[in-house]
Length: 90
Image 1 (cartoon, one colour):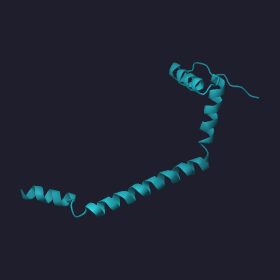
Image 2 (cartoon, helix red, strand yellow):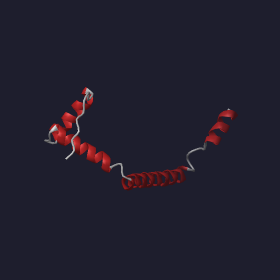
Image 3 (tube, one colour):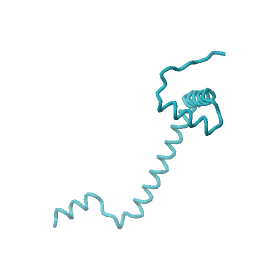
């Protein structure tokens, strides 16, 4: 099995890795492998498509919600044009 040695690892990165390894009851090497595997898996085209689909769904929900709110408040909230006109007429 191939191995990897990392030299001059920044202290902050080492501490972060060590903290996660301790929390998960793993060695540093085991935690590094888990992190590398998760990064590789999350970088596949299928995963990226899932992320994009989730973002699009969230944006569509937000747009529907804002349109519904706009329709409900249309009679009570002045448009920007109305506010500017009222200010000019003062």
